[in-house]
Image (tube, rainbow, N blue to C red):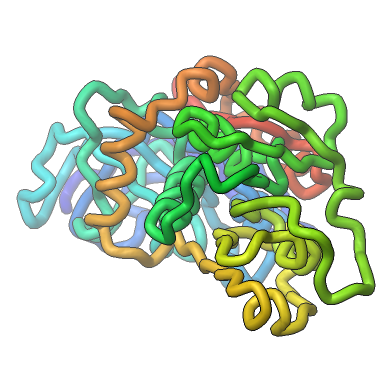
Length: 332
């Protein structure tokens, strides 16, 4: 890698005990070692980016740091020749945006094994409308289907339905013929969720703490994006033999439950990881979203921002005030 190119990045620094993000000018010489240099045109905003920007050491250990766990753009240099220069690629997960400079900069340098070729018919913006959130939603739905979930079994719940993962899960499940019950704490987004295909929109009180270890089954299957107490309550409401795909922790990482949903109803709790899974699994889901799993309503409703808007948008994540898909456009 010989090119030294200046570029703009939104970088987080520790200042007097606080973590402050700002646009800075960097050089590709400042990037970590790696086999592939990618010129990033778009990124996507995620809860993990908000944690990194707030100084969460469980996500990012060392600062200054450039967040952005998603990136899409074009290969500029490749030590291995694969992917070749000029190839459009998607990079999500692994260590990107955590301890490796991420997609909130106009360039990243990463291992070749992190790069997925852009699916046919997609551009970088489309890829980042889905991003890690869309990938995670697709993996959640894929796990339910693998476990035998079918529309005729009954209603499917999606918790945190107004969020970046939830909105894609709602539209995808509805597209596949399921009766989707969207569970959200944002009552003002009910019409938007119904527009994505939800048959019903319920508030957070649907999963309010109930002392009984089991309650009357309400859902055949579910996608849970929040974890914590709501997940514990959701498990009590799943029909015998049903499954819950679990992928988030905005309500907390703890899970206080009993074994009764599992041993009396045969409920399956399915963990979903979108970070460290093999590249082939990511590529398979991207190809589905570029084809039969396309979510046109999600694509049409995505909001574009520039680097100057990142601070406000990331703080909204931490306050629970963010909804839908937000794309960072480095050209804005």
